[in-house]
Length: 295
Image (spheres, rainbow, N blue to C red):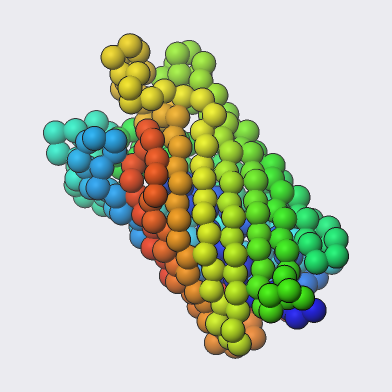
């Protein structure tokens, strides 16, 4: 069986949800005592939120590190740094909605993954957590996130289809996020759960040093308020709605990577906003590079 196509540098930031970024997701783990470094730049741009015209630009700089502890066991960590700008005009309602860029490191996330080989399948449970590293705006079109701690529980199933379709892999991911309550809106806001689920499907194919992928992501917030609720909820909830929205998002897209050397890759990808509710219609464009080292 040939080696797995090297799509993990792209996949590491495959799940991009509005202004939120999930950590590394992959059914395969690196060799023991190996260190992987990844640096990506992501540009997110959307023009409106529901029926309100408000162009928003998100620029992410994302350093990520992954370490293979022993065979089939790996740990990773990442800290996205965000620069965001919103041209909200008369709809501005957050301190960053002033048409200028505002920058901040956001949430530090770490995951641990263990791969269970099963014939041509890799079944990889993962657990992780994230915590904000500093204060940032949680209101407005230019909100940097919800500023909440979270724990993550997921499983990624990868299939190496080389025996049937040469140099081709398929991955399916489900992850559940257990998130603390949003306190900025007081007891009213704390009544809403912040938990959400992420579903990802990915197919990858490699040709010599090139790897390509295509996939779909779905983000499902389990509770919250809708824009349609504005006529029936309190002014307090309306003022803090950005941290309470029940967001549902579908992204479609793909990308490619190229191995410059056996341990150096560069990549580019695009994720197009296909459908969503109670969210911004942001599409994502990304480029980056990764380096692997044996320690």
